[in-house]
Image (cartoon, rainbow, N blue to C red; front, side, top):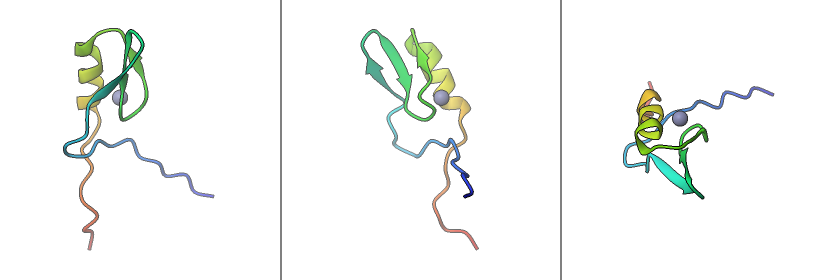
Length: 54
Ligand SMILES: [Zn+2]
């Protein structure tokens, strides 16, 4: 079974959500203590292109 789960953000996606006192990257699920860190992580992920291949 091919698991080709890519970690990409989508336009308009919220960059993070809160988990108690932490910030969770909405793309990879990594937890951070500061908003700057979680935003850096979010922006390090490639943006997903629309499925209009060919
Ligand atoms: Zn991330």
